[in-house]
Length: 481
Image (cartoon, rainbow, N blue to C red; front, side, top):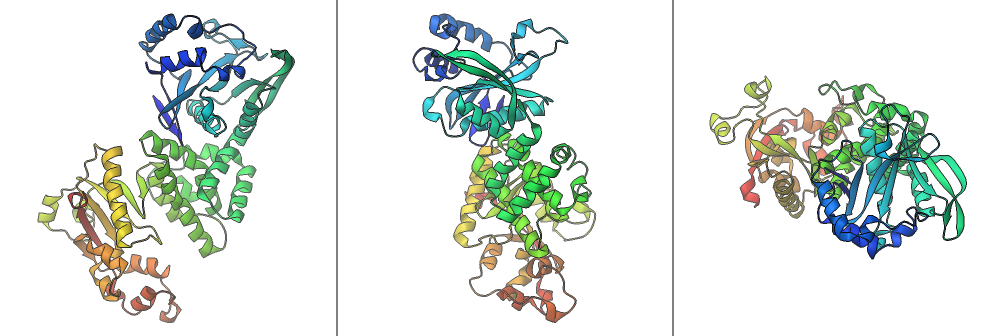
């Protein structure tokens, strides 16, 4: 099992890890000055490395428990430590797992060790514990603890940042290097942990300072509401989704928090952290557009319906374009129940309904310069062949007003839109100006004189709506290899 979160990976132990454990207990032992340094007893790995290796090989032959008790910690392909868990009693004393009786009252404690000192002070421990906490929360845990000692200031700072609060202090319990320190037990406050996740996500989104403040204040008023809502927000079918029934501000707060769960889903599929962060920039784009239009923070119903693709982890920002795992669909009587467009039988034979394709979306303000589009398409080919090799997409698919042939009459020589559209073979079209008018002008206006005239396209299209429509285009994948 693997859990990827940002730049760290939690995974099951492998045979090659045994050598690291022996090294960490015999040569590279600086970490032991901080992990229970009052325990002077020599470890099994240090006492008899050969016997330790034999014992660990035997353990690897057994199936790992569910849920996991411990997992190894990696970053950038380097094995640097592990996360762990154990049980304690009401008096915060450790309980051996084999001594735990059915029905016995016990409390789950989480632990962390980064043994490679060159990776200290990089925030990796905080992110590893975040992933470990999320794992147990997803497995039903709601009461989590962490134990350390008063001399381990780095661990105390990490615990408090994540939302752990001091639960029990045993004065002068630990003797470390001839000095007495307090034994500390922390308990996780779920609302504070959620606040930490929210702040991390807001840092990625880079919303305006005012919007960040409003989001934080809204969360603090009802933290439990947003956490519980994550389970049901996208139940059912679009557009009748529970999230649509919430206020615009509640939708925005939800997504600023829900990014964490969506990130885990993306990274579980092998999507690189950088691609996930770029993909979530669509939340900022739509939040900015909503605020510009309405004068206050929020997300529209259409925004959160669109974000179902983020929720399911099936759309990806690569360069200037968005790409979606997709199966070929023809928007005609046979494909969607109405004759929205007409497609030839020959076309359907060449690319049958259901054939694997990559759906192309153009975000508002996307850079459609030829070089940037080339870069995005090549990125997409490499990305899907690496992360989703089973998909075997045959073509890029694009349903868009940008591809409608009549639009070219309105575009100047050398237009980026025209160059983008020319890449695709148009296989269907419809003279319906509704979507194009919405994209160009924001909405339909009652009178011709009320339409904005700020861009060249706005001026060219006014009075010539017959040139607007929608089209379906395909671009065979082999042309991009």
